[in-house]
Length: 411
Ligand code: DSN
Image (tube, rainbow, N blue to C red; front, side, top):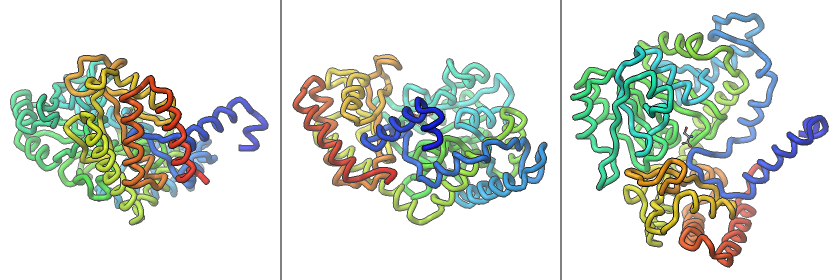
């Protein structure tokens, strides 16, 4: 940092500010985490300087011997971690990775089934403003209005009626488990492909708190920076029979030179995740989410689907007479970072939705456990029940300081 500080104090100052924000705050946005220093270090390396279009052993550039070594390590570790037949570690991000899978297996205009965005899905699972909804003919499934759970009978009915070529499962705001086996049975009945986008809960698939997608899914896409705690990026895992098509869809289909510094950081992250300690960490994410949900429920909040089975929770703010934006902004003022989110059958908008989405991956990285979740849950409830109360805010701000000092980050 000292060279950067000297050369470009403005950028250095902003980076330092962000570091301090993370250190001094409680990061509870469920898609965020704090990568290790080893992961961060791998990203800031001269591997970024190298062009390496192609794949290990088959590059379009000379001088790729060290790049090949790094990418082969990432591939080998990813395959082992996920019990996968094939791994492509080049995708830059989850959206592009999903795009490549569609490109590999479908024709524009083909029918796909995905979970509705406002009921927990992702933009790339068929939303009309996204390339997915514009280039493909998406039919969407949702959650049951009463239970707020995915209704497998409805999924089956839609699949049999619509006969899509692929079903996409996975979510950004669904607090429950995906039954991969049940989805596979439906896909087999219709004779179609299954893509599991496990980006959010990937860590829990490794710890055993969520079922594993293989052997049920044909393709697995995951980002690497959420519960997996690696660099901001993604990978695609698949059965061997689809390996060529996937590789071609990434390069030259949708990407050029791979970001080998990020691939190095992914290799480091997979090494961390293969360590038995990671399973303990990811299991604790789930335990912490349950403990947090319990205190929120005990304090009288309504949670979507009545709780959580994974790493995230959705609070329905309507009974509190505030919007998700008001609630999340009141918390952010006190350095508790959550995000506003739509809830199923929301009457609000994406910008002014009725929910707050929060989770435990980053707090768990800091070493916090159930006891801290109880304390934090009580703090959150006191703030969102009284968004204008200055005394409560002062008290919570002090508690955030105590907690972040007790569980320091990047020491
Ligand atoms: N934006 C991510 C999230 O917050 O869940 C998904 O891509």
